[in-house]
Image (cartoon, rainbow, N blue to C red; front, side, top):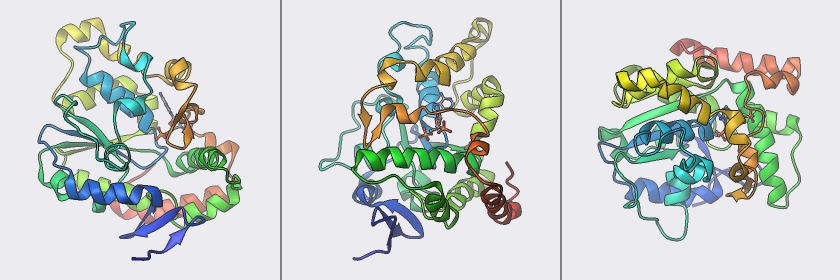
Length: 301
Ligand code: A3P
């Protein structure tokens, strides 16, 4: 079946979302074959909102008894976060062969970029928990523009100007876009299903990381014990997963994950970098769309 394409044929429009063509097969296979466990934890993000950071945090949080966050042998010191937490439609179901998930211990920590409407029934019907991370649209776009140019150059293509990518993004055309529909789909669900979906914001995590991590741990039924409170384990995890720490590790500086340099997942790691890239007009356009879309559902950045 031929589907509408955009961005030089790189994206397919599938049930209202723009999916990278190379992930379509994985998406269909994921939806057909994946069986969620009630104990699964699914990390969901729109690309470039801090997936790598949250993967590091969730991995450290859930494995903190097995791996002391201060240990010299902590897996995050030698493995890129994307290799510790697989993306279902890409890493597990996206290759020629479906990878086994049997090596993962319970609770299985998995991730996806799919909007809620494209999630398999198995996930929706099970008791598995979803952690959704969002980020303000302007920083998300700027991060995406840099990242996509990194992958374009690696694939032998020309980089795009910010104006070209901006037009696409603001018209909803970007990997897993429209951005606004993605965020709203989980936001609405989280209001109804607060025990299943935990809604996190990048900006709040930057501002109050320990408070966010404690809430996250409670949601995942692994709250910090009084002994851990005394030892301030939450702080150890925040430090281990900080941009400064992770971006300076050799393992995150060299090599590639998919078509991107591993280092491209660690660029600035700040709130408000859009001010260095967007014109006043671009900023107003995104503000206007965001206000129009999010106002009625009570979502604000
Ligand atoms: P910038 O491009 O604005 O720097 P994703 O992981 O979803 O691909 O998102 C990447 C964005 O998260 C990048 O944003 C990256 O720098 C930022 N990031 C990566 N690790 C981070 C960390 N430990 N703390 C804060 N931000 C981080």
